[in-house]
Image (cartoon, one colour):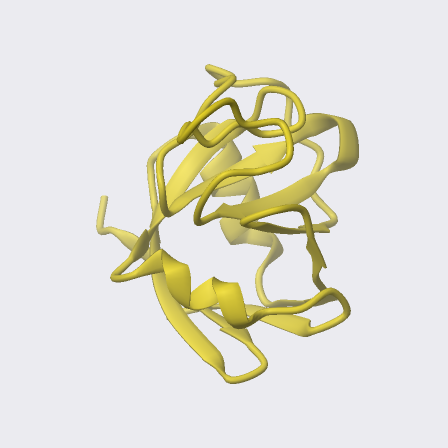
Length: 124
């Protein structure tokens, strides 16, 4: 399977990400394109998407740049640093997420994104 790459545009921030071969990634890919207002929670932006995925290898901590799906809120999450739930330098979602992809390049560009910014997701 060829890599599934997506473009993420949020205000002045433009990034690319690569989705993995998980079921969650396939459901997200099938839902594209999307345009949704972002929320922020520490160094995470997230937004509800029209995808219903079951927990799939859920992780309590994630890595810088990971894309996660948060089952309780049907939310797409982009992690670029500690959240209010983090202990020390770890990156901890509110509750376990399905990691389904990774930002290509520097994920800290998402520091510029504020709550309410429209995020556009599209196939690259």
